[in-house]
Image (cartoon, rainbow, N blue to C red; front, side, top):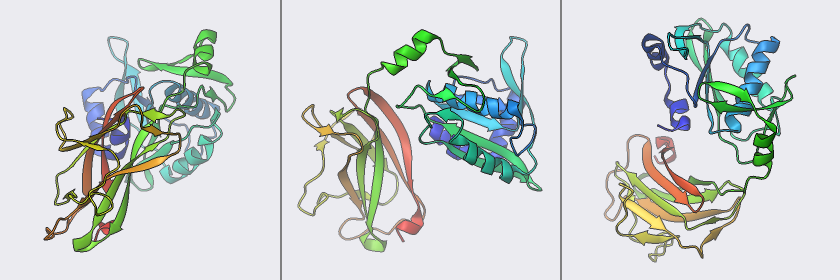
Length: 301
């Protein structure tokens, strides 16, 4: 499961399961407690800044606020207790405020959410994506660069920082959608967007929907035309796959529609729940990534 998918799905039961199993911190997961929900403690602010810098400069990760972690017999930090934070809504507000101040430059795509435990208390989760615009210095009194190694955040050496400043820019393909109609005539246009800093070439995009919506035989424009070449046989494990060659260029910030999903003619019964689009995406200099796109049912009905 991707870090983003875990961020979206993590529940209170999952957190208690971490504790019962003594789940270890790892390269993508860190447990923290806070002294107060207002993040007035310098230690709390340092933890936030170091974690945001370290994850963004590495492969991204999650911070779960409100879980005690201690070393096990092997010296690895593990979840040992849930320690709900009173006024968790205040903590969420402070995390949102401090996110723009915790690193330089700021990090795009930071997200926070809460898991309530009752009485205004709860846990908070922070998602820090891997950054394409680093390196990012930890601020809030730190003024150092960090990276994530194993279950800890470590100060970056000079050669690490120099390497990141000289790192070749890379593309970053993501998936977007556009709903063009509703009910029995519902159509969903799927496309790819380059959110990286380099031109994306030779894209690959495969997807599948387990519900009633299927790939339109009439394409995006009603005349059978689609945004990329339909690959009749691909090894992605998904139903429909598309690709482009090295002559296809999607520049940074550009978006490109690829395919259309509809209910067919005659129309099948419209979906009655959120539409789940399972997909895989890749291009030159971007390894294959898998995730699920959720289209809320109220956009279709």
